[in-house]
Image 1: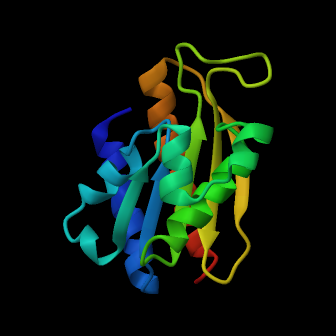
Image 2: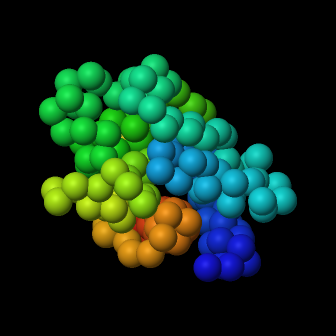
Length: 165
């Protein structure tokens, strides 16, 4: 996966946000801020990107994004429920109107039969709209999984924005 692919997607995402007068915030766990890095590589991104939260540990998810202890205990950090609360928290704790979240298992360790390496949960929150979630299963090494998750998030954000016409 080339950096130019990430930059192209980030440029498209920025154009879609700018055209709609919307600002983005991100909450990232397994990607460690890769979406934020990609979008801030675009000149002028401060007009449409507010902030990114890299919440790798469970306490950081709770403290910065308001993910509940009950959610983490019942469903785990890698779950659509946690991704949902991360996206809601990124929206609440920023000046953005749209937020995305990513939490997953990039490997090479940490996977289980129920939650294998490559399982990544995503959520998208838009002010005054329902939060949507999904889970994807990516393949490859740690870096490939993180890059695939980053590209998937940016692609899905663009699709969500296209619903705004």
